[in-house]
Image 1 (cartoon, rainbow, N blue to C red):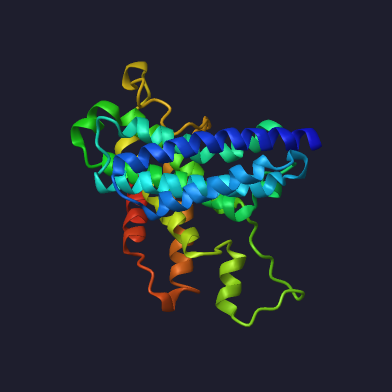
Image 2 (tube, rainbow, N blue to C red):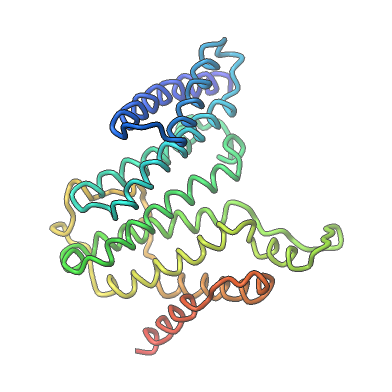
Length: 295
């Protein structure tokens, strides 16, 4: 375990140096100070100082948390730029691939070193959820932009399907890191609605958004990709593998989307009724799924 810990420390230090150089390039290109880049750089500077100490005394968990927080801030800056520019067609596929690689690095590092039975033992559930959410939400935003490009869809629908499957996979992963709270006599709640949410595995607003995003991506998949089969000529080197994942199992867009949106509507119109979450779009998509099933 000690050897694995030292290996993680060395690798995190290397990755931190690479990320700091990338941040420097982003700052110079932006031509102005950015809050997220400044915060990311500060975290990496602290990481460098800690790694400079006796490596045997370094806590891999603390170092990995610092690196992960820096990556979350750095990639957030780049994601915002892509969204503001509506994902320019000439380079967005490669940039999305790069961002997801950055956001996958902490999990990859833990997996490669086989340090802990579960990733959450080193990274923690909240950071794991955040990494999966950010990757899934990035692919959601990218796919939302692509679905508005009619000519692109005619040529690249199989590629859209890959992005959708990977994005949905990340969002479902995010929703499944923490188990729902089991309500029993040993668990006391002052608020019954809160108890119902926790028992449904809803721990934050982001969990609800992940459900809605997943359902909407299933809708896009059924609408734009249902009749398409991936062909070798349908992918290009820059875009292929933009999500850096291996979700190879078939995904039933209608089944997955219907299940998660029914739960979304039930929660929004049940324990969250007073919060006035909008369910109009979710119900329209459910109607689409039902109509598609009856065809």
